Length: 175
Image (cartoon, rainbow, N blue to C red; front, top):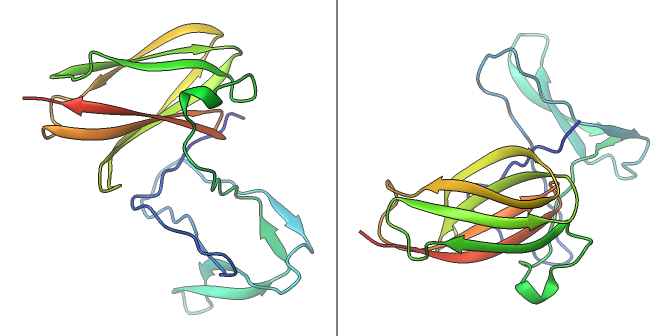
């Protein structure tokens, strides 16, 4: 049902006229499962691959699939305050206190019921923390972010709304 946000651990600069390939591997045995939707006969160059068990029991990549997984890659730039509108589902997003010592509160106002996630990256773009928080109702909302274990410095905190819109604010942590 609800979108589940999966951040990349490292930022990537995408180039035009280049082919990119990514996958999701579930390396831990668990009762959970990952479902990826697919569209049959949509991979015109048969470049899609799948990682499955071969006849000898090892995992290998099988290429030339005739279907393309429906995984959405969002490559838009960060959204600024002036770009918030009804399309994002978000009216406002602020961080208080800023700078923070132990707890930073992510204060935001939704104009519709939305699924929320967040990610925190240091200034080099390295992923520091992230969480799929859950479904929130329209109106004012608060998420307490425990920053006590973060090193002193500046961070980019991104709020992800409905798995599709990312709005980023800068946060400072002091010790």
